[in-house]
Length: 281
Image (cartoon, rainbow, N blue to C red):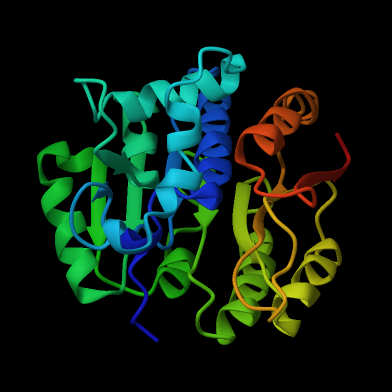
């Protein structure tokens, strides 16, 4: 299914969680001199306008990045993330939001590489255009990221962050993320894997965390952010999560400090909250 366009949801609460954590993961990787790759299996368009086009229809950024935009009391890790968004909005007005590839490229060094996959024909063209000037540091493939990932593992530098964040509109994505992680761990067991997933009422979504915990990974971290209670009709995403394999050892304490702030800032009702589980750290 190729109907999903992330522009409708750019900057929402799920993007805040995903990109705040992505920034911390890349910062961690840059602490060592050795080069690394970042592989993004579902890269989208790379940049999104918030004041025009698709993002204005749902305006989900208003309950996401906009709630952090003018805060003066941000924890350091969140301030780091918001400052990178400010780089796209130099006049101080929130008009644009970066996708995962932009955050990655801004934090990478000259020796690091970014490999991007996007199957949607329109978004893959936008992605190519948006990163054309990045040269050999970035390669964009208009292809299925699940299939493309297999060909890249293990990467030449033997260090990599693999971001997997499909839309999950196709129920098959729940199966494919598990298959991708099982295969990835066989090919590249030391990789840093970061899987984003939605919190939904559909059975596939509710079973996914249990399947993730059954993966053959010794070191893992599972974090979720709930922004509201489940709606009366059971529809809609009430939160999202990130499941990490081989995560940085410093991450649990950082999240314990940051997640209560995010709940207070992004929570929409009394059922907002977070969960944090980890093992091997």
